[in-house]
Image (cartoon, rainbow, N blue to C red; front, side, top):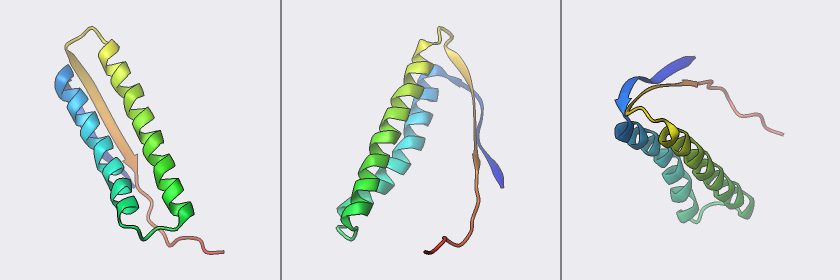
Length: 89
C-alpha cells in the first residue's frame, strides 16, 4: 500500500520544519527503545546505528532544502507500507 504523506508547496522554513518533524518521530522511537533498557546489546546497537543513519539523512535533506534559492518549495513524500508476519529462523 502506498500512502501520500506530504504533497504540496511550502515556504522554505515550513518545509524544513516538516522534514525535521518527520525524522524526529522515528528518532524518538529508537531513543525510547534504548531508554527502556529492555533491549539486548544487539538490538541497542541496531537502534543506535539507525538513529545515526536517520540523523545523517536528515542533514542531507536539510542541506538540499537550504541550497534552493526559492522561498517556496514543492514537497512530495510517499511511503510504501507492507504489513506481514516477521520471518522467524
